[in-house]
Image 1 (cartoon, one colour):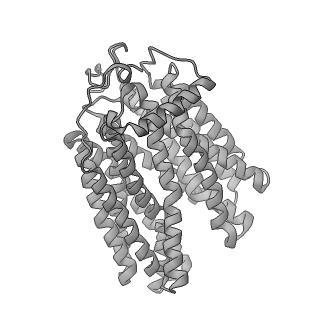
Image 2 (cartoon, one colour; image 1 turned 135 degrees about the vertical axis):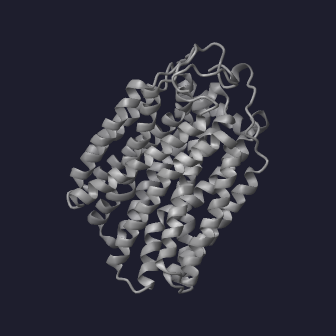
Image 3 (cartoon, one colour; image 1 turned 135 degrees about the horizontal axis):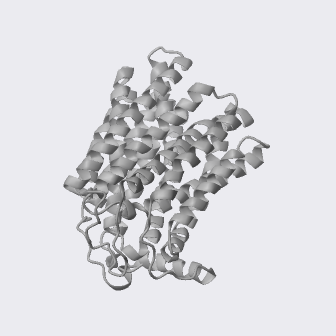
Length: 446
């Protein structure tokens, strides 16, 4: 299946040479997912926030870390379509992935080795490069798959990618968290090493019609992006998909990021100490990661069997049930074991989101503008990463600080608000079809 030539499809341009996808190309692409997960879990989710806490104190840590992260996400939010347009015009996309990875690795090596402001700037640059690399990496999916196995390959990347979380957490458990510059160095080296197979083995068909990348291109790409957003009828389902994606990624990413704090509050309400609650949070996180690995494989297989739309619908319905369960844990004071069930279900379903929505996006994307459209896809995710925590902060501030509810109860209300976003996304996505498009003219040839 993988070592044979890819069958022609609507997304293949006649001008491009026949394409052979090898097993080592697939393995290299999948390993990059593992590599960047090591960075995202180790730096973004764990150790950099702890470094900020050490630097500014517990009282200012949350606000400071949120501000630094928001700055980096805002920059990449604006830059995503331009970066995508550049890769559509370039002879190949791989050089962009290599450069962004090397920038991320280089600035990660510098974290914690200078003062606060220098380290903050290094993190902003490293995170921008990491986010840009994700965009370039997603756009390489057509080079390692075909219509018949795209869901499987995407799900394989998701499942193997989550193993990177084990590596990141394991580094901290093995070495402790006192020497954070050492942790950043090990994570940077691991990111680079696991990225190399992708750089070496993924072979692109290349762009048969490369164009100049200059200031005029930037202006043209901005005009094209605005025109694309205004003329949604030319790309059926695209805008509805992107809007729907805002709502479900907003809610899902937010509840996952707040899971540890939610666990501590639930644990303390059952009589455990805060330290015991933090230990429980680590165990619940590991449970979620374990089931996310399994979920990536399952949902990827199901995407190939049922198609990305039907699979994503099933995933979103599963998330509705998960949000209800998570809310009831806080609102009704259910025992802590119920949160393990919620976390395992969330992890399993989280793999389904990315296994289904990457192929779904590819169905809606003309071959000539994969980079640009994945830039829009990335913009949506980054907008959600900015707005989700803001919405959570507003809801919990009102319920906990203004109305004086217990933290677990206020957070339960927050989960119900996030549930409403999933329902909205489900309604928005209902009319969107995932039938393969027949692209013509300039949309067909890159």
